[in-house]
Length: 115
Image (cartoon, rainbow, N blue to C red):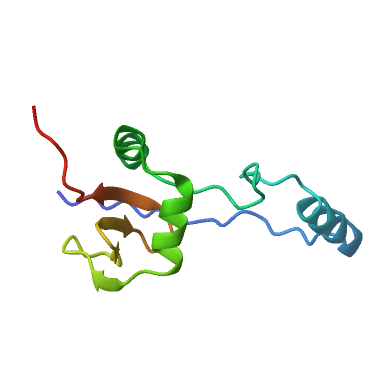
């Protein structure tokens, strides 16, 4: 016994929107407040994962040092994890960034005392 089900896809009905409504929505988008407000120094905030933020706080790395590494790296190479990630190196600091600019990890290889 053979049973076949035929499901037909019905797209939603298309209703054209008035031009005035589209322009009003566009103006609202333009005048909307920023999702990521600038820092106190006027620079846009750094977007980073929780782990990257925790490592910068633990190592005492400032946002300014991260910005300098991202803006002027001494060495750029693809990250071993792939997927468009880049490894930026400046001095002893290594910052891994995603394709969209999100900071994924931060390492500072300064000599530290171990207890």
